Length: 554
Image (cartoon, rainbow, N blue to C red; front, side):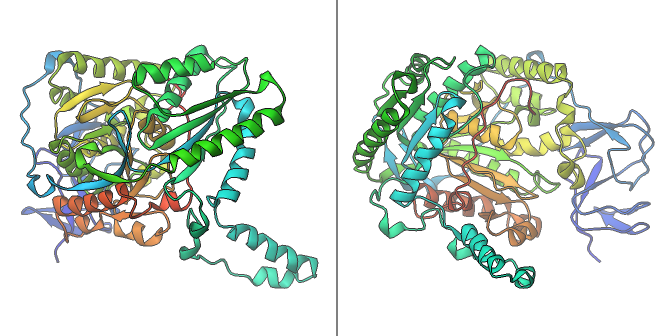
């Protein structure tokens, strides 16, 4: 019998199980036979040698933990016998790095159909944005959302309201027995983000996106400043045609601060920005004026049409969430290869989630040619780590119960696999939260690992598409940046077809190489960038938006 096993790096002293193994079973790998004293679940790892307390466990070629008790050869690593540990890093340890770009001649002349902005950026979508500068305006934002979406054809299907209506009808007629017999159903063909596509008056506007949040006043001034920077990044994102801003008037996040942040990011900014303050008069006057002016602006934004653009105009975010033991060996390396291809074509990619780079810092430092940028990465990592520890939650506490259950025992194991999304290209730039990605190549962006805080941060730094790998399944989306859900395994893709857009399971099954799967994904990305397909998150209107409060999130 051929056992399905994988050793990720020649220096590793753990082997990954690609199938379930029972207690007492003997398995053979690379000429070695291992007796498994304990069952090893799929996605988990067993050690290749006897380990004593304090001995290092190596995976992906780096230290990912130390044994806390004796671990017998063939025994799986668990939270009971292994603790997080990673290698020291620093600028003084920097080693020379040479990169061999992938062959990209087949992609050189390819284009996508995008929305060209006056500043040279190209959007993969054309959204109008409506934002509140302070949480006091959330109610008004939601009123505008209901009015615009219902009347302009952007509202979600009312299938769930119809479900409740049916149940209410049965209840009012005393037929509770029938209610108990109704079986849930899944109508995949009815869940479209534009249910009345033929009735939409603005054919070139992909949606009007209404954001709400709980910030803007009452917190720290630093949080309010960061919120202004984040909103400025969203407004400057190439997927946004213009913005309507509601302000109360007395909050920390002043209109002048937002305007200054926009100009700081883009001195050539020329998009429409409509601003209204409630304390200038009555709510009705503000709302009616905002509705009229926004409608007129939509008429103008609708005149923008998709035009061909080189692939170098793509700015792709690289994210993982709901990760499993397959993430670092299928979907994340697939994203890494795609990232290398786009970088070789002159495009931009953005790797975020600094808590999930713990343990691979030195590799990224080695890949950063500019010492000042390498030092910026070190400073951001150390500052973030110290803030997390001060809050009682260090990077070692990052793995979630789902991560651990599916084989990611320590943060270093999770991080070593997560970093694979960044491929092998040199690091072109290092960005703090809300800083724009302006340099072609691979960019490192300081965000939490939290799914929505990270995707929110990437959109704020200018990504026009986000690739999001998941082994457990997550519906995460973004208001202005299409989020492609990439499954690490086919079982997940089959189980959650309403969430997953692309399957990397063929890599695990040995049916495709990482490069073959990545090229297939790239073809999907080009169609998405051209508006030929929608992500499942777009179809579900999964518009997640959470600003990051620094130092309190992993």
